[in-house]
Length: 544
Image (cartoon, rainbow, N blue to C red; front, side, top):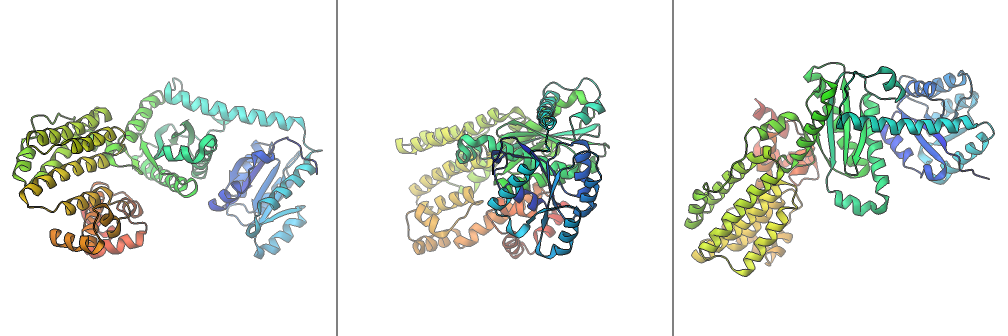
């Protein structure tokens, strides 16, 4: 069979999101001469699109759908004036009666959902393409060109709005011509930032463009289902989403915005295996201020350094951290130094925590100032080590490594954990001289405090401190007063309760992931055993 290089436009009509994604990723569409130009969740949505965009060559549709099912869609397409697209039905084994009715309406091609083999689907598509070659005309090719130009123009227009602003009211005809899903005059801007992008680059290599296309497509699919919003790729790891609303009701806006962003986070994690942080702006009521609100969304996304990554950062979250400006630590370190000289571990760690709180007030001055404050604290510890004879070349090399790493760490919590580790090591040396503390246990505790959100085992920590599991377990229990497992659980529960108090709107699965639990059910059982309440009950109790 001769196959030409002319691209054919395909529409997928399926009410199940997972099924649409499965079909859209089943084959390399464009390299085989096909382009998926639209995905609809019901027949009515598909029909409206086809009426306005007659360049569709092939419609792959489910039979059982809400609003308008596949048979009704076929009837409507048969009544359209001019050339109608070739229809392929998706069917299950128990859809025989529907399939029979579809065949009576002139359909000759179908795909079994349970047997979606890439080769079978490709053969079917190429057969359709061959059959349609005689009927298709150059005007369709022109429509494809216009469609591509419209997409590029839409993306360029949105970027200009966010960078320069809109000096005139929206032109409804322009919005319609560019097929923009922006109907209201109240808008929010969200900046979606991909975390761990170095790993993504390594995974995709020279095919990073496919990654960007997948991210945009996944976000756009969520927005299409919501019926509002547009997305553009700002760069390979940042994506801007513009949402519009017909009302300025903050309750309504927040509810809808949260649902959309939660779904975006889920889809990107589920289907592309990436985690993101989303900074959200306040509600913009004047279009000329869009650039200002875009910058606000970007700044809120930057606050992931102190508020934690992998979540949505709303304006009120930013206000909480930005209400106070930062101040230098120099001249305010005496209480910490006194505690270190006395070898009082509890007091020293308490003062260190006070320093961390003071540092986080620098968030409003930007990440560079914030990191500088952390470096001040590290240098305070280094000076104490020099002044009191605890510094040697080996230890100073390790501290220098921490200093260099600090400028690459993109999480305040992890940076604090690094500095805490330095302080713990210093306390170990102090107690070693005084014979008051077991160095091995301090290292283990520091490791647990730094890695509580990861998988932590007795065997792994035993290897780190170079002891057998049984010896380390006995030593740890004697020094701490509780078993290794009990200590890890206590740390994780404390971190979980801290998150619930500060961020009661977090999902339970998000809190579980943050504290090292892969299973939400397991986390809930452990939490209830530790606190006497379920996670939801605890959240309600602290919210009162």
